[in-house]
Image (cartoon, rainbow, N blue to C red; front, side):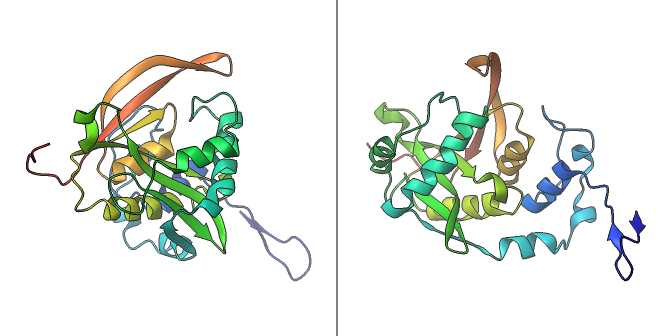
Length: 233
């Protein structure tokens, strides 16, 4: 709806489906089968409707992805602790201390299976992605668990896609066979992001965690990686 606000000005009132715009910003242009948490509108997205979309390119342009450093840990911790306090996406109940975050940082390296990347916008860390040990037993070493966390104000700006693009590119050549991601439901944007990068839902755990006075389901998603042959241990 367009109307006049003051002389010489035009006011524009747009009826926008923010969840749909969110997925457009993520670059999800393929048709998706119905998944838990999706509205019927999200299942109607087709490549022809979004092909050549310039919004994603403009949004992505300001995001720079690089390996995380110790100087990034305070910003990483702030992003994560927001979801500890405000969201069901992590099952931690108490904020993580900076000392604990420094110990966590020691599990990641610039080479190898376990990486930690940050998204930077105008000099500020606005998100991070990691590939972490999936299980502690040695036979699980060819699998990783991946995750992405974004500052709330940049959700929908393409940072998640940029982080996963760089993360999976960095893991090429490593002796890895599978990537896994656990998604506490509902979380349609995270589902769309993981499906965009080739993850498929392989399991649903019903109500394994309690937070904010209720139980939450967790869906597990799996992505085949590039290790084709079996190497001796």
